[in-house]
Length: 248
Length: 290
Image: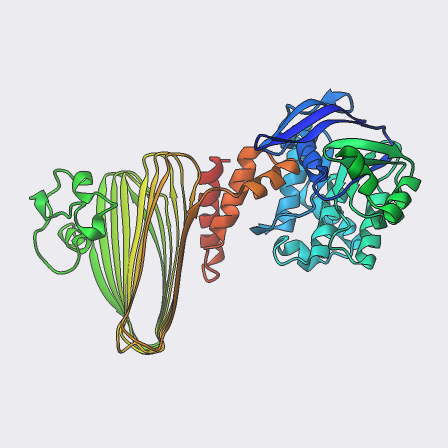
């Protein structure tokens, strides 16, 4: 599903990701863990196609190299990035935003726009599972939302857009334990043999609720170790020190 | 006789070259009022009227010039009166408009202007707050495409106590377009406890777009609350990436963000059909006709 081979990413001339290789097969959930500054968010942004992230190497989604595609084309092919810091957009309601996003993706895939009543029904249904009120859907996107509300709203976008492959960048930051359970349940509802998931996190806590098949440790732009879920427990116990020393 | 027209050396016309735009037009040398009022009077397009105490009126003024059409009005709003004015401007050539409003005690003047510009469009508003506790709201949006020039100039003069002014003007310009905002608020010594706020924000959508702003607060009273703000910039890159990462194509993402920015300046008091017309004009300007 997602295959990354010898990916190098530079931002402002500085190489942050230094030859990263990773494969997440369809139906699996992988986690990337790493200390601050290891390149976790840079990796996520580069996969989503952010301007100014100069990427070389290969990143294939369902066999197709996506590195030369625009961010919107990647989204239409089923890639989704849940932002660590969702952006506030004054004047654009959450409903209008989701309508624009969903119909833009449908258009890019050659599908007809979803009729407004069906769209509203879908939104309300998914919003209810995330404890998001109608009133919140009408508010300007992310403006004045708490950290937890922003993350719940990212989960709502994911549920509505139904991507084939999602990257969750530090989804647990800003979430209290109840909200974390709600978001995790929403994410877990989308996991099946057709979908893939990459969870980027600092802490083991999130992985108690979104259980990964595999864990990769990212240090200084490279994956230095991969293993099963038990690796998260080891990192929680021993920290990243030994990997940082080895990489130095 | 064109020498009666202001040149760009005239501070008030620094960014709008009326003399060049009206080359060959005979302008009246003298007479009452500003140059637009004199031109309008000469063209027979000057009106003056009064709103009696407590009366309400709403005017929707569509200005669509083809070559040159100056117009001017003077409205005196009596105590407790409410005057709402909406101006929808677009067209070719040179569009000039002046609206002069005098407010009695407790009177209200609310205005919203949407200007798509012309070769030169200058829409002036002059408000004299003569009675106490009067309220002024001036909203505006300018949209300047290639070879379009829109100038929103206003002077609000507070001459009586406890007046209140709220001004919010937003605009967007593309390559070859020029937006001008000149807003002056004067608070005379007699106008104690005036509360005045003025904000202008312009968005430069492309290289080669121009926005000129001259916000001015002149305060001669000591017990007042006044604030102003002025900014110009481009589309927020973080917001643009956020929308694109959700599948919205770049052009539409820019349109959505610019639209959200502009709609913020629309007044709550506009009748729904007029508001819909304003929204439609903004959308067509951003995206082309549907």
